[in-house]
Image (cartoon, rainbow, N blue to C red; front, side):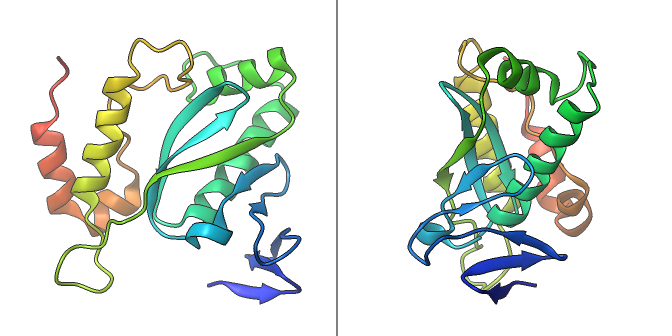
Length: 174
């Protein structure tokens, strides 16, 4: 649930700073500029830019997923983790090496409501778009993703089982 508090957002008692209503929100812990002033906080597929490199990501709530990302980055760096198989390893190595102090989000698409419904997400289309972006950036030196398949989080596989199964059946690595 979103509550507006002094031109900021509060989610689970975490204050997200917005300086004015027409400016992007900034996540706490690791600062990520989130374009809530333009998009609100819809389900979307987006890129998080860490300097000149980016990560392809998605979320059912733009702001909430950005907060989770910022918390994860801060925790990984603070605990001095070094887990090469972790999805955070490439990101945090880049942040440390390049001395990145903040990131910004570029929304790729935020129109995922199924036709004929008011609130049901088209999760299959979200996953297809994320997969297309991953495939497109497979050999890119600027992409920080270490996954070759779009990640299917539990909220998707539980609530949108048919869409996620359709995606998983149709996904084939070239």
